Image: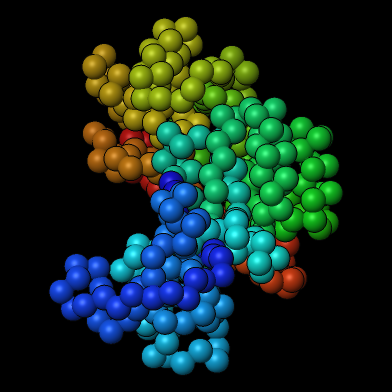
Length: 373
């Protein structure tokens, strides 16, 4: 996901000029265009000086016009914008940051891009940051705290404007890097009450408890928990499952089936088959993610197992297609787009030097009860 942003770029102009005619295929009528400067000849890149020549203004005026500063006549602003568009001018973010002493880059660290949950979060982050002049830089950690630490060292060396990170599971060195950098930081998808830490998300444990309680309320008593990836948020859901069954006096450790493999529909089908083969009497299955649950539903159909009559199946995250399964999948809808928007909004306030009214925003979750349970 690469985004192009306005920035400052340029060298002092040469003043020799040539008047272009109306018949020229690359002309703004009546505006002079000089030969490209040395920088353009050597790099092939259009510079701010080229834009200024075509618009018959100084590079400083061109820069101010493109940044939308006050005090520049609207006629000049339009002339500069027309020249920039005609020349295909792409500003240099590094030069702008150097000139303004303000970075526009905001690294966003997520575990995976193959999980649509994080794609939704990133989309909302971009839609919030971009209109405010900031560029989201995506870093993928692959659920590896060591890889996240390397990304943090790389990004923080460039003094970004802000930072968005997923959760709280990281190395001590990463925590120190964030704290010592002075860069505003907001954590995604998890909650904490720690002082001075900003976060936006919901309680993964409470969500796991709520789904398990729903299954008990429907009359199921041997409720299994099936999970993959085993990242911190998955294990928080598992703890909510355990807490609910312990409260009901029904917890059996053997009814947990945990796999370190990456989550997928195929794995969900395989795990359901293993569960029913090795744990007889299970009457409900709570999958930690919808892709696993969708695979489990398809496997049940293939094996001739009636859902929910023989076994109920539930998931988590309400991913695309869950409401179209046969039967439609009961799941927990998580506010991933809202998390992206709210976290970026909180970060914008921090980058402006403001203090948010609250350091944490719990956006909750919604139980989507459908025919699979």
